[in-house]
Amino acid sequence: MPLVSAAILPHGGAAIPGFKEGKADFSEVRRGMKEAVGMVMSREPQTVVIASPHNMRVENNMAIVTAENYAGKLEEGSRKVTVARKCDVGLAKSIYAIATKRRMPVVAVNFGTSSGPESKMPLDWGTMVPLWFFPRRVKVVVVTPSREIPWKDLMKMGECIGQASRLTPTRVSFIASADQAHAHSKSGPYGYDEAADEYDSRIVKLVKRDRLGSLMRFEPALIERAKPDGFWQMLILMGALKGKGLKPSCYSYSCPTYYGMLSAAYV
Image (cartoon, rainbow, N blue to C red; front, side, top):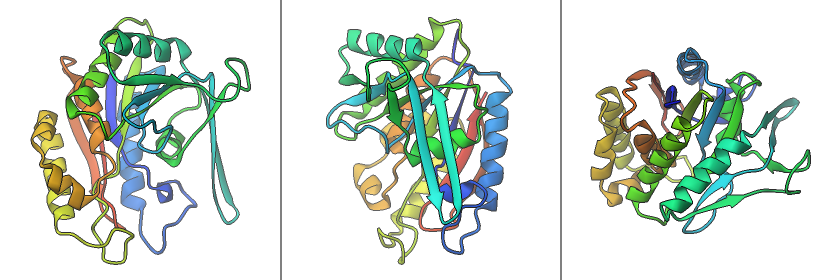
């Protein structure tokens, strides 16, 4: 079945009620995420393929997690959130098989035991924060891009995800877990660079205008200065959307702290 929906979602931990990031107001981020996830879920996906920049990072290779289970925990003071999901192992292995056949730089990774309850990959904040907004019944496949490989290969990985989705009767959505530029504040860990405003403005415009293909024309120097962590996941999204006819709706963009956060859905 063709991909039924997709989204760009941020992963700032303060989007989850009860968590904080200094005095920053994440209410707009939270609202946008809830609305975007609601639109994604309106297409009744049974599995979400989520690309995170913070999970299993393999130099010069993209990773597809084939562990049967995922689990992670976020803590801040007395506030604790646990996110646990089942992996759609069949879909994960299908994506890997298709990508391998196309000679893509990709590896399948597991954790703990080869199968069973102890086959459990730890979740990172790039997966836990978006997945917190999804129903527990939805299965998951986690993929992690590589920043060392050509952009066209990341786009092709998205095409592999789209092809695997067509070959399964399962209704599948794709989520690019993507914070935008990280250089919006002098007090932030990356300092301030005016490139951050330029980068985020361009991203928001191209999403609203349904022109993700314009990502391929971004200047590497701009990306380096702006310090996004979502560019590579959005390249995968671009490939996954190819030929699907899904159209974007932007629900929020805000920058309550040093990095920009965009929520958008494709249905």
